[in-house]
Image 1 (cartoon, rainbow, N blue to C red):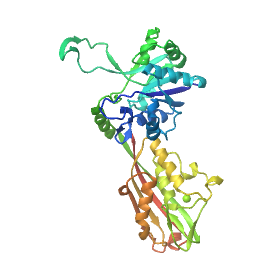
Image 2: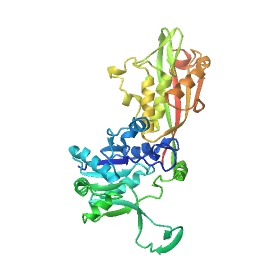
Image 3: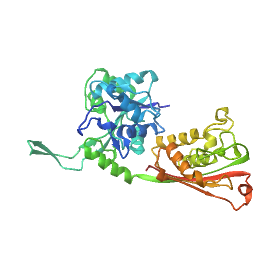
Length: 381
Ligand code: MG
């Protein structure tokens, strides 16, 4: 069984854009570049684990930008890119990887298909790089003047992730040599490096303009998914209910294993529905004592975290409560605010509605409250 680790190198302190923040921590369409790069590998089913390499001075930056991602504890980089990769290989040695992919943190738009092509080719080749053809005519220049036209035939532009048999790359790095990419090092050891198609979108964020180009590419490469949720809880005599995360005084209570917040349960299922990973009962089994009397905020926050890790952006939540009592109207705005807060989205993106069922059925007889919800989430295409 292959054990493939990804090393994402973001130890550079390059501030080419003139600001104080290294470019891998700048936001690209609202999410730090480094975070996007890590997420691509963390979400890939064929990658065992992801090791970030960072500058020691960026520990706090990394924690706030990427601290919640399911990746290994970051290690500090070395004095050069090659030294950083060397450190990462040493840190992974005890876990005995069969292969390692090395990726630049500054390539946040790497897609799953490119990772797949590299991993597939590693079955037969010991070293693999993704590359795209060179489209522009290449010139050699000196003092803003052309001195020669370069023959473009046979030239490709190499990207990352670059994939290697672990032992091979460790051996190539053992001598402590420097190279601008890892393939360069193993080439020197006489290894034939296989080239697979890269992706035009897999751009390297180098100049400030690249952030704008990247943001535009991201806009074009999202797909909306709509998830729905439905839930019912029984009403009994009591001293208050929690609906949409808001305590409402009423001579009633909702009966359930957790706090029975039927509104947050329907919303949680709607969010999980966009991921296709089951429902609230799959994640938080009612047989588990941990969730007895639990605050349902836990459930919806976990659903949001999973959406986030998958690269999803919640654009809208729509909730309808079905009940005769308590009256929802006076609490509607408080619910919108609370739900928006729980999901880290704007209040404008949250709709709360309520209806009676004309005294018909179990909701009409006041035996219970029902809630239905829809969530719209944009995911990477
Ligand atoms: Mg429920």
